[in-house]
Length: 160
Image 1 (spheres, helix red, strand yellow):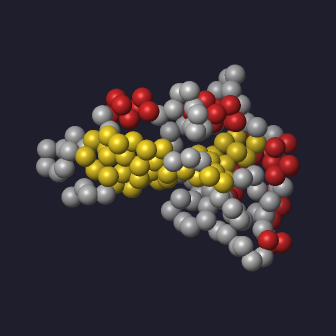
Image 2 (cartoon, rainbow, N blue to C red):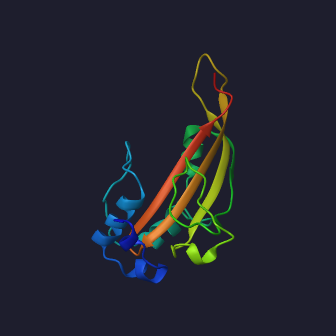
C-alpha cells in the first residue's frame, strides 16, 4: 500500500528531510479544517527546542500567561507521559492504536507523548455559568528535527 513504504523507523525519521517528513505526516493524518500554523518555520528553533520552550513541563514560555489573561481558574497541568505501545499515529478523537500482545507487528515510531490540562474556563456568558470545567488533552509527536505534530482536544463540561 501507499503507506507501507512510509513507515520509517525512529532513527530514519530523525534523518528525513522536511519535505519527506511533511509527506509522512500528511499520509498518516487527515487534513485539518482549521490550522493555527502550517508550514511555518521558526528561525533559530528546531522542533525539539520549540517544544521545550513552549510546551515542555518546564517551558519558560508556557501557557500559564494565556490562562491568566483569559481569567481561567484552577489550572492544573499534568506531566507529559510517553504513550506505550502506540503502533501508528492516531487522532485525539480516536483511541491510541496499541498492541501489547504482538510487539513484533508494531511500527517503530518516535515516541508519542500526552498530557492532560484541566481548568475552569471563563465562559463570558450572560446565560450560562461563569466558568466551565475544561479538559484539554495534548499529544506531541516529533517526526523529525524540523517537524513536530501537536494535537489538542478540548472538552467543556457544564455548558448548557
